[in-house]
Picture 1 (cartoon, rainbow, N blue to C red):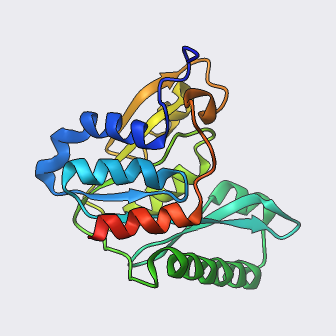
Picture 2 (spheres, rainbow, N blue to C red):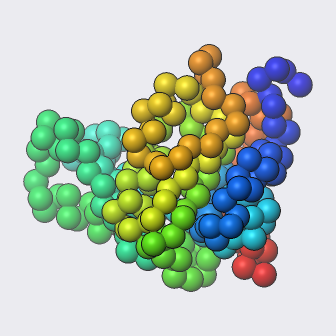
Length: 217
């Protein structure tokens, strides 16, 4: 195994991350995994902490002329939140009707994905709770940033970001968004999340559905 590949797979990363998060078990946290790759990691964390597991689906709101250029995001939850990048909004100046329509489209996609993964089970509310947000790693931090801001707007009492690996500079930029950050391997020489796993094959929908069913059981 290369010196960068410190995790055999996502489940292994989850077990190692869970060991670092044991101190939060007494706070009866809610564990939220970012699908799809974050779910196997989050499953191990939730199992070790005896905590409920749910999904946190984030959908980008793209600019009118360039859907890949995010002007904001819709964050799944009992009370879905819309998080806009105000600087980019001022620069792009999209029409309010476009933003409203695109927001509704992404909310519908979140509902569709939740139905696939959870059979339409309603999201667990983060309001007043300690919430641990888990992914298999952070690269640019865009999705995670939107997720954390959405949870704050939704009334989470305490937000902990927990990831196996991330770039040091991106973690620093996220510190204002979370109450605490737990990262097992912060890298100055970060290149890609997958470099730190021996097995980084794509997480399939079937695995997400299976793990969420096991967690409920």
